[in-house]
Amino acid sequence: MKKYYLGIDLGSTTSKAVIINEQDEIVGRGITNTRANYKVAADIARDEAEYDARFNLLQRKIGEDVTKPEFKKYMQDLRSVFQYGQFRRRMESL
Image (cartoon, rainbow, N blue to C red; front, side, top):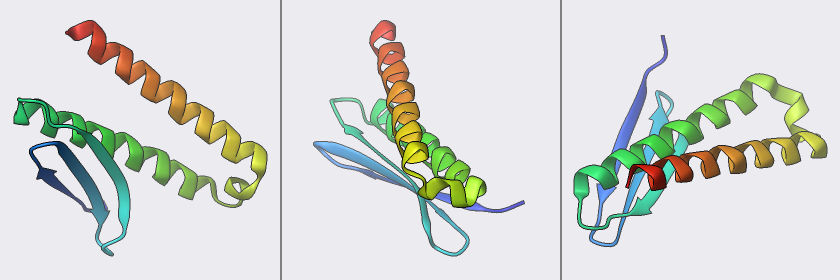
């Protein structure tokens, strides 16, 4: 099983997360407004980085098809729909 490492930078305005693999390659990134709750900001940034990593790893697994314009458009649309779904879920939980 491969190992991945998560780093989180909690700032006063924004919080960022990054996931790297054993070769020190960035495989996922996440960013969010910190708001007044560092726990929530860390969780959101982590989730964003995990989702980003999964999409990036999926692209790598698919391989050559990634270079096709129609595939790039499909992946962009898929990410957008997924991010919108996450946004709605967070808004509904407020």
